[in-house]
Length: 84
Image (tube, rainbow, N blue to C red; front, side):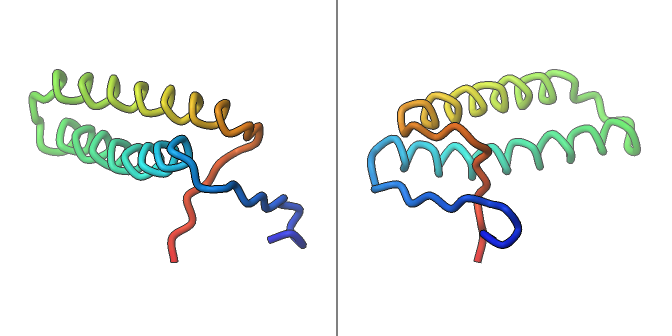
């Protein structure tokens, strides 16, 4: 990854790091839920606008939590959750 120009930074485990990882995982789920709800609206004619709005509010909350955790940990770049 370093050859591709990415800086790899190891952060000691802290409560903020746990919060960051948890929010990243939940954000992925929230994005997936929004995609499914919008797909159901478009292709199945589902009347789920309230569910979409709730999911978008949750996504916004998670994005704020991620930003707060990054600030606490002193991370200024983009954070990606790597799955192995």
